[in-house]
Image (cartoon, rainbow, N blue to C red):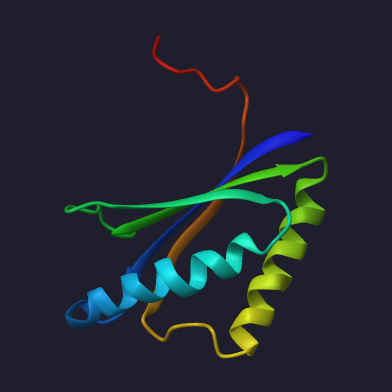
Amino acid sequence: MGRWLLAVESDCSDPAREKEFNDWYDNVHLPDVLESKSVLRASRYETDSPADGRGKFLALYEIESDNIEQTMAAFWDHVSEKWAQGRMSALMAPASATVYRQITPTMERK
């Protein structure tokens, strides 16, 4: 089974409602995404100084798959279904989404 990382950069479309955006992302969107059977873990990060064209927020999704194209198609179908159910936030402003294949084992400090 291959290991992959989906990195999604995003912004909040209304900075005055950033707390609401983060609450939705953490308590609605991440649990929805984790229902996708190939997603093992999810975490989020934030930067105080995003570069031009980059998102302020970064979500990382660890994925296990033997066929990443098929897995990602199923993943986006799953997310689209959740959005169709009204579980998307109008505050979500995606900046980018990139899939990376793990090429070395995870290493930890000794």
